[in-house]
Amino acid sequence: MAKKVSLLEDFTKGIWKENPILIALLGLCPTLAVTTSVENGIAMGLAVSFTLVCSSTIISLLRNIIPKQVRIASFIVIIATFVTIADRFLAAFYPEISKNLGPFIPLIIVNCIILGRQEAFASKNNVGRSILDACGMGLGFTLILIVLSTIRELLGSGTIMGFKIMWDSFSPWMVMILPPGAFLTLGLMIGASNWINDRRKRS
Amino acid sequence: MNLIVIFISAAIVNNFVLSQFLGICPFVGVSKRLDSAVSMGMAVTFVMTITAVVTWLIYHLLLVPYNLEILQYVSFILVIASLVQLVEMFIRKVSKPLYDSLGIFLPLITTNCAILGLALISVLRNYSFMESLIYSIGAGAGFTLALVIMAGIREELELADVPKQFQGAAITMIIAGSLALAFMGFAGLI
Image (cartoon, rainbow over all chains, first blue to last red; front, side, top):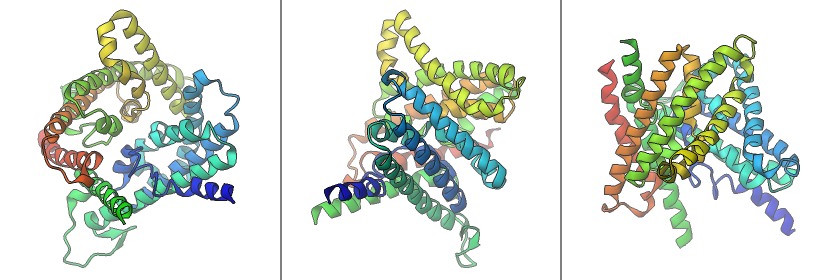
């Protein structure tokens, strides 16, 4: 029974307790850059999750073969391979999204979430646990991206996924889809998550 | 003239950190103290310039002639990782004081998305050799500028009374937002 609980824990810790963005502050560049619309946010979240799960699987399988001295370089090459696959896939099937995300798809290679999970988890644990961990982290990342992009798209252009939500006389807050809006919204979200954690600890 | 526009655009108008969101991790992590911010900025500018030169050569002399553009990402990141290692070894041999001040930041640069981003954007915009060189210096200067401004503000912030939940990352993000707002004022410059 104890083992089952810890397996569940491997999965769920990424969503809130060790959330890659709100708690660990990893992978902030794509988080801020692509969340101008919900569609981009979801695409980015899925691309990162795909890379994370695939590279965690491979690296966890190879963890006893890769020599310790060259592990970072090997991790990066494996990650870069999967990012190339994701990039080609998006360019072939969703050229519009691929154009919007621009250089931020290849930049998944240097996303600290992915390298961080390989170093901290996949290179030390078996395949099953590594996949669960990667899925949880990917989900946590995607959820935050969706929340952030929903706020920004709703206030910045009055729409969600391209559908008009706000009333007619609503004038969009241009600043929300520009860079300052990204920083401000994420700052407030981190503050809010700290506040919720504090409240929980006290009660 | 074109080169000057590229420089100013990369350094100020389209600042790498505040308007292109590249290199946020060191921006949040290494902006607590002014002197380490300056060192980090210098190290990044240095690596950026070398990276721009080497990746331009590799892309245009190796990958394009042999139709190997698909290997762009893998080869670029390998180049950056080994360059950083090389620069670290070189600095340690040549100048001990410089190594002591930059040393701990150099390994961090490998995973700095500003470096890889610079190489990718240069290819995307089809820059010539000279243009991508100037672009990299401008981007490095812009990165250093943003980092130094942020570190200056955060040193003062230690005296301010920030709500407990907002201390650390949250207030840094909000300040970065106001800085980005200020930098938007340069938009009409070019």
